[in-house]
Length: 200
Image 1 (tube, rainbow, N blue to C red):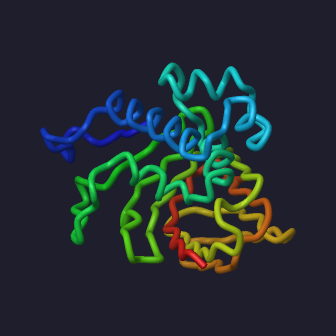
Image 2 (cartoon, helix red, strand yellow):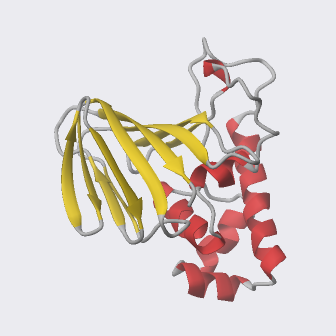
């Protein structure tokens, strides 16, 4: 779901319903490109067939965890998938044009500061978790994905490679991700961080 402050929104920007509709169509298209049935995708993603069917028809909005599972199956980062439902991103990405996706259920807000671009291997994301928010991913969308997490405000607990790291404001955690990961805001105050993602 896309969300912007009223002061930052440009008149020509797409609304949340339009973006979610394009996302639903893109997810259906990715499945079709592979020749998979809904049952096959459900097996691969370990998500119910009915949920996937409703998602592809645009009847429900995906959570961060659900998108994470589908990105892993399709071998894409979340930013790359979200960028595929937008027009070609410009070289200069103005602050007011940066896509913001909100998962209200988990308390996660994701701003695509520097979205994926053909020919480039890196992207920059700003993440924010409200106090108590806890998000887990079964695995990276691309094995060996390089991540650099720079905490801007608050404290972020990151679990990767079987290790738990407490990352405080100003700290930077960097690693290559091969397995499950978890992002948790343990304190009552929200946490805000920059995430640099580099494809292997």
